[in-house]
Length: 123
Picture 1: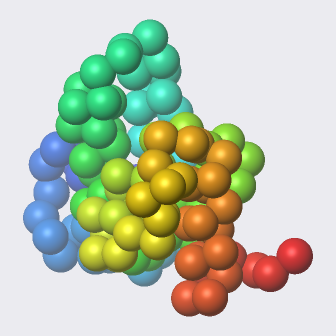
Picture 2 (picture 1 turned 135 degrees about the vertical axis):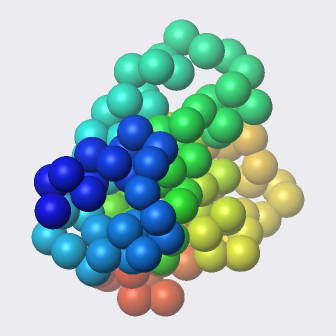
Protein backbone atom coordinates (compact mmCIF):
# COMPACT_ATOMS: atom_id res chain seq x y z
CA UNK A 1 0.00 0.00 0.00
CA UNK A 2 2.85 2.41 0.75
CA UNK A 3 4.06 2.08 -2.83
CA UNK A 4 0.63 3.05 -4.12
CA UNK A 5 0.52 6.05 -1.76
CA UNK A 6 3.94 7.17 -2.94
CA UNK A 7 2.78 6.85 -6.55
CA UNK A 8 -0.21 9.11 -5.94
CA UNK A 9 1.84 11.59 -3.90
CA UNK A 10 4.31 11.90 -6.75
CA UNK A 11 1.48 12.53 -9.18
CA UNK A 12 1.28 9.04 -10.62
CA UNK A 13 -1.31 6.39 -9.98
CA UNK A 14 -4.85 6.10 -11.15
CA UNK A 15 -8.21 7.25 -9.83
CA UNK A 16 -8.70 3.70 -8.56
CA UNK A 17 -5.44 4.00 -6.59
CA UNK A 18 -6.66 7.24 -5.05
CA UNK A 19 -9.96 5.60 -4.11
CA UNK A 20 -8.11 2.77 -2.41
CA UNK A 21 -6.04 5.22 -0.40
CA UNK A 22 -9.12 7.22 0.58
CA UNK A 23 -10.61 4.04 2.07
CA UNK A 24 -7.43 2.96 3.79
CA UNK A 25 -5.70 3.67 7.06
CA UNK A 26 -3.01 5.44 5.01
CA UNK A 27 -5.26 8.43 4.30
CA UNK A 28 -4.28 10.32 7.43
CA UNK A 29 -0.60 9.72 6.80
CA UNK A 30 -0.92 10.86 3.19
CA UNK A 31 -2.90 13.94 4.20
CA UNK A 32 -0.37 14.86 6.89
CA UNK A 33 2.53 14.51 4.47
CA UNK A 34 0.80 16.58 1.78
CA UNK A 35 -0.30 19.27 4.26
CA UNK A 36 3.23 19.56 5.63
CA UNK A 37 4.69 19.78 2.12
CA UNK A 38 2.15 22.46 1.16
CA UNK A 39 2.64 24.50 4.33
CA UNK A 40 6.43 24.43 4.06
CA UNK A 41 6.45 25.29 0.36
CA UNK A 42 3.98 28.17 0.63
CA UNK A 43 4.93 29.63 4.01
CA UNK A 44 6.44 32.79 2.52
CA UNK A 45 4.20 33.13 -0.55
CA UNK A 46 1.73 36.03 -0.62
CA UNK A 47 -0.13 35.02 -3.78
CA UNK A 48 -3.36 33.19 -2.96
CA UNK A 49 -3.30 31.71 -6.46
CA UNK A 50 0.13 30.18 -5.88
CA UNK A 51 -0.89 28.93 -2.44
CA UNK A 52 -4.04 27.12 -3.59
CA UNK A 53 -2.60 25.81 -6.85
CA UNK A 54 0.40 24.19 -5.18
CA UNK A 55 0.50 20.52 -6.25
CA UNK A 56 0.27 19.15 -2.69
CA UNK A 57 -2.79 21.29 -1.95
CA UNK A 58 -4.40 20.17 -5.19
CA UNK A 59 -3.74 16.53 -4.26
CA UNK A 60 -5.45 17.13 -0.91
CA UNK A 61 -8.48 18.46 -2.80
CA UNK A 62 -8.26 15.37 -4.99
CA UNK A 63 -8.72 13.17 -1.92
CA UNK A 64 -12.31 14.41 -1.92
CA UNK A 65 -14.83 14.08 0.92
CA UNK A 66 -12.68 11.50 2.72
CA UNK A 67 -10.26 14.34 3.54
CA UNK A 68 -12.91 16.61 5.09
CA UNK A 69 -12.55 15.43 8.72
CA UNK A 70 -8.78 15.87 8.42
CA UNK A 71 -9.12 19.34 6.90
CA UNK A 72 -11.58 20.36 9.62
CA UNK A 73 -9.19 19.10 12.27
CA UNK A 74 -6.39 21.22 10.79
CA UNK A 75 -8.74 24.20 10.46
CA UNK A 76 -9.71 23.97 14.13
CA UNK A 77 -6.01 24.19 15.09
CA UNK A 78 -4.94 26.84 12.59
CA UNK A 79 -7.19 28.77 10.21
CA UNK A 80 -4.58 28.80 7.40
CA UNK A 81 -5.99 28.70 3.86
CA UNK A 82 -8.15 25.59 4.00
CA UNK A 83 -11.26 27.48 2.85
CA UNK A 84 -10.55 27.06 -0.85
CA UNK A 85 -10.16 23.28 -0.45
CA UNK A 86 -13.34 23.05 1.64
CA UNK A 87 -15.33 24.93 -0.98
CA UNK A 88 -13.81 22.87 -3.81
CA UNK A 89 -14.62 19.55 -2.13
CA UNK A 90 -18.07 20.40 -0.73
CA UNK A 91 -19.41 22.84 -3.31
CA UNK A 92 -20.56 24.95 -0.35
CA UNK A 93 -19.51 28.30 1.09
CA UNK A 94 -21.07 28.98 4.50
CA UNK A 95 -19.06 32.17 5.04
CA UNK A 96 -21.34 35.22 5.06
CA UNK A 97 -20.18 38.10 2.83
CA UNK A 98 -19.51 40.30 5.87
CA UNK A 99 -17.03 37.72 7.24
CA UNK A 100 -14.94 37.34 4.07
CA UNK A 101 -11.32 38.23 4.73
CA UNK A 102 -11.64 37.66 8.49
CA UNK A 103 -9.89 34.31 9.07
CA UNK A 104 -11.37 33.87 12.54
CA UNK A 105 -14.95 34.40 11.35
CA UNK A 106 -14.37 32.29 8.24
CA UNK A 107 -12.99 29.49 10.40
CA UNK A 108 -16.00 29.63 12.71
CA UNK A 109 -18.47 29.61 9.81
CA UNK A 110 -16.82 26.52 8.31
CA UNK A 111 -16.55 24.73 11.66
CA UNK A 112 -20.26 25.36 12.32
CA UNK A 113 -21.04 23.99 8.86
CA UNK A 114 -18.82 20.98 9.58
CA UNK A 115 -20.67 20.33 12.85
CA UNK A 116 -24.05 20.58 11.10
CA UNK A 117 -22.89 18.14 8.41
CA UNK A 118 -21.37 15.67 10.89
CA UNK A 119 -17.72 16.20 9.91
CA UNK A 120 -16.82 17.89 13.22
CA UNK A 121 -17.80 16.82 16.73
CA UNK A 122 -19.79 19.48 18.57
CA UNK A 123 -17.95 20.95 21.57
